[in-house]
Image (cartoon, rainbow, N blue to C red; front, side):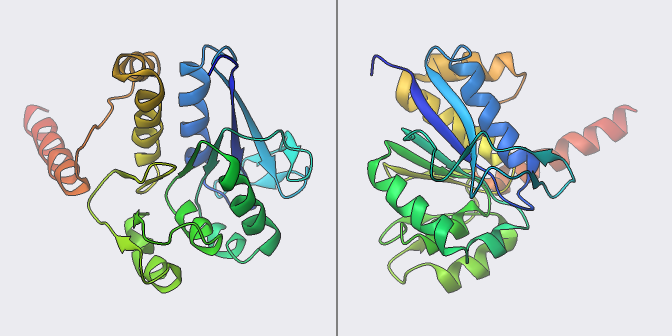
Length: 217
């Protein structure tokens, strides 16, 4: 693709700030600040929304005037449990996904994809605390995958909770431009990209590092 890809990041009331900022920054940094990716926020309307942590965000576009995204990012947060029942939003996600190259859900953004009828026959994942709810609303043909950072279904890529969104976004960069670009992006934002690592393995490693730090201290 010669032109810069449009990357739309959906925002809504009580969305998780890190879900938004992590994926947003990965694409912004990797895209050389507009050369390869044009990253922007979009909301149900252009009224400000409050993140779970209290930061107020002004969406750049509304669902009605948003440029057609090549990549759609659907973040999670406490508000996803309400927003998934917003028929206007889920209809827009469904229609946008049909024309998008890639749809990336982060954390409980998976709930919105389920309500948008995008998960039929797919391998799906989400935040570990939302697996039961995802099982309730996902189609019977969907397979819930636990203990992974992300899953790739082709057009639909889904990450586990919060920081796994960094890993999934970097994975998408690698798909589009190669692993070297993804690694360079991770280096620029000083993030250790967890490639093909299970959540369980990461938890064990985190425990090891904490214990090691306590011993050395």
